[in-house]
Length: 373
Image (cartoon, rainbow, N blue to C red):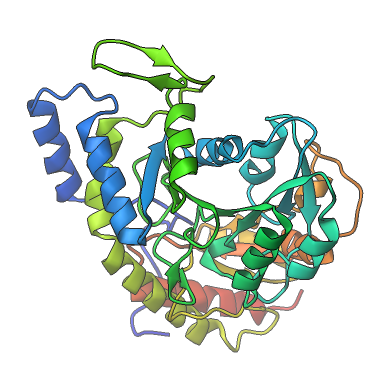
């Protein structure tokens, strides 16, 4: 433990957004400029910045990460009766995006090494109805067979969509997560590494899919002149706003520094918790991964959460196995997802955590682990 870390005066939230003077000044300047707030020039600038940051050919921003998934599925032609494979351990938006379009979400278990989709389980879940696979880089991690997985789907004529909601700034095999599949999606909601409050982004190297997404997000509208409308398809209103883009651009400028800091934070968590009894840490390559949440597995999760809360430390449970949730209720055995859903706990993970705070948190975790059950 670092010196002087026996107590903290303020409650440490599990996650909170971090804004600075840059966002305030940019917002004030925009409002003084007479901007209309709605989607316009600043949104286009933000899209270009995301494309540049990720190395993607195209980027389209939308209202939120769920809309990014829905628009991606619509772009590849998912329709009622199709099947879309989703990991069982993910946020519920992943399968919801498919089911709300009338398709069926088919769950596959995750592998214990990365908590991402298990390639063998994915292959077993494929049927003649499978239209797409949504791969989730859970907590910005990835499996070693990710590239093979994407190629396998390509060979089967199955669309491979990356749900990289938690992974902006993290890489796999030298490529940005989100840019390996046919389409990739990011979330810009408040807990993420950068945020515009709400928001989602879609990246792709496929120009045809990109053009479809532009129609889908804006009512299916094409505008041959600035003051006329025509509609080539039925579309939705998934539009972003310039006011979000103003915040997002300032946040995106901070992404490299945040990625670097989050890798440092992860290493410190691992160093301080590596010998804690009754705690299992998930293997992480910090040369490529900036974790979204600093997670652990413990058989005494509920008691640990209560102890940490009493010590001024906020945590949250990992996502439940979705096949067994009331919204789905699908039969099947998904042992890894069930285990992490029962044992997973997320420790404080805000961008502005200090080394002293991390040391205090880890000290309290170790203190709890030394207590008898």
